[in-house]
Amino acid sequence: MILLLHGFTGGSEDWWACCPRLKGRALAIDLPGHGADSTTVRPFQDSIGDILGALPDSVDEVIGYSLGGRFALGLMALDPDRFRRATIISAHPGLEDASQRADRLADDRAWIRRLLDDGIDAFVDDWESQPLFATQAGLPSTVLKRQRRRRLGQPPTGLAASLEQHGLARMPSLWKPLAAFTGELTWIVGAADTRFLGIAREVVRRRPATRLHVLPGVGHNPLLECPEILSDLLF
Image (cartoon, rainbow, N blue to C red; front, side, top):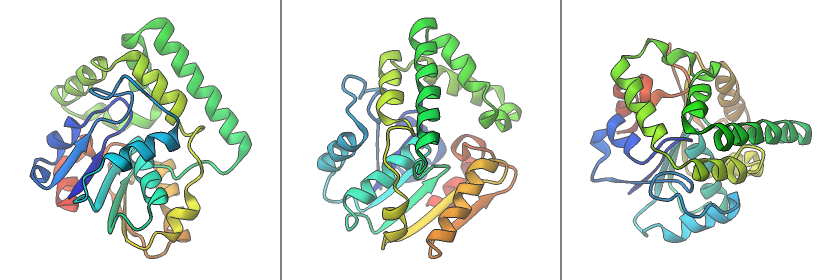
């Protein structure tokens, strides 16, 4: 069975909208701080352990997008023999430089203040206006409205706790366990997502056995921008 892990401000239902053919052979969960799992958010490594401990024995494959990709890498690092196959979409294996980590922590805490001081609506406005998501501007309004509605339905305190405990500044660097992963690894990234394309190429440099798929004209969120293509890759 496949474990599906969504991105920040997303939810388990994102996978069924993108890849309905995965139903019946996959388990999609809400990450801590999101949706149904919004009450307790523990530090990154503790959350990884919680998820791993709750998984059915039948789960032997993991697919993660963005934040979910980082969680997937954490699971692979904690129990390297658990997963025979992993697919990572638009994710970062972790910061290795202390100054970059400090800068990222400051950025995350600015987002937290925006969320808690000004409310979820203002936060989502700013979040969606990031250059990271610029390629989504041409998507149908129905798709963007559905995404926005899901984001506005998230618990603000849960999202804030997720940023504080599970942000890139808080997670350990997982580059070494990633390079040592003995299972089948696929990495998916949008060609227009230049920062994460660079990360994907570095992954392949450090772990040449990785299968890399670069999606032309696609940005950071293939689930939203090219669901049919992504579904074909995953199924």
